[in-house]
Length: 454
Ligand SMILES: Cc1cc2nc3c(=O)[nH]c(=O)nc-3n(C[C@H](O)[C@H](O)[C@H](O)COP(=O)(O)OP(=O)(O)OC[C@H]3O[C@@H](n4cnc5c(N)ncnc54)[C@H](O)[C@@H]3O)c2cc1C
Image (cartoon, rainbow, N blue to C red):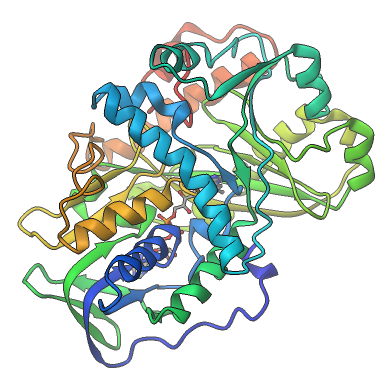
């Protein structure tokens, strides 16, 4: 995806010693929103972004481009905050979708922002109406972000009768994520944020101010924000909160005529209700981008080839695409890639400040829903970095007692065992067969998914 972006020249690496009020490590959506928000609320602050690749080289430049809210996670939010806070955060996540669209418009970023809604569907008997508990939880709170869609309409709108039932969350959008992240980078540079690319941070000193060392330079800063997604497993305190898991995407050749013939013309983002979720959408040039959260793990949580191109995961993704759209069996695939998801146990992010410091902050655990919510992440991290006591820095996502994963190698070995069970279980269910009790039992140990399911 990122390769499609014009003029992908990297900014110069850091080769000297510089001073900053805030240094942000990581130039994805979270890092860039943080930097942009800091400049917005404190225009005099000197902000430096350090990125080991180019901005968007991580998950932000290669995701599915679903811009979602936290309404599907309302039950998880209610698990550690009161109803008022949960409502406020879920509302904020819905508003973030429009804010993202407005940002693109105001800054002339053509990120293909399209607000055509998200269909949360069921594609097997086992998936049932997975959204029931979520819809009920919303209704108890007096809100109704989801609309029921009649069965024949689901099949008609998605272009495949494999979809048996669905709800629609109308507020959701899609974007071309690489265009968005590169547009954000351009705005950041224009607003005076200093970006150094091809610059890996090797060490962050805990003293105040911190010295952030790279191979060829250093930044001395009063506040540090770690926005390094799954790469944050390099920091033991954060490694306990997340497990890097694979998500993979395949893309078809342009097939606008075929999309018209099957009736999938509304631009809806679609997911099924598997834990290893299938997520798919159409693109502006009439392709299908079809992704799957395959959950493949790497030994020790190291960000290796598992998270750039993982052949087994791409095959699993293609198999699900062919099953979902059998009438497109002859359609060629032109692209396939993988990326890292920083999954937490409840699939909601965690914000905090490294122990023993007051000035090194982090925001990780987007769990496959970071395109829209990273806008909120930027507000939270900006407030933390500027030492502001406000609705963002004091919200319940900050310093929450998130469930932790066991240390390596148990995390990898146990995770692989559970993943195997989920994979076998969901394969059987997709065939309409009954999975083994062993797999069903083991699969229950898996972390929560993209949505809270019944
Ligand atoms: C295949 C795939 C599909 C997805 N689909 C969706 C979707 O449809 N909708 C959705 O909402 N979310 C989706 N996600 C998740 C979403 O992409 C992420 O939640 C979001 O991009 C996170 O942004 P980020 O800034 O935290 O991470 P990133 O974009 O990964 O940014 C972190 C950056 O830190 C840099 N970095 C790491 N270590 C260092 C270091 N030591 N020094 C300097 N820089 C460093 C990395 O190079 C990287 O650029 C998907 C993810 C993947 C992988």
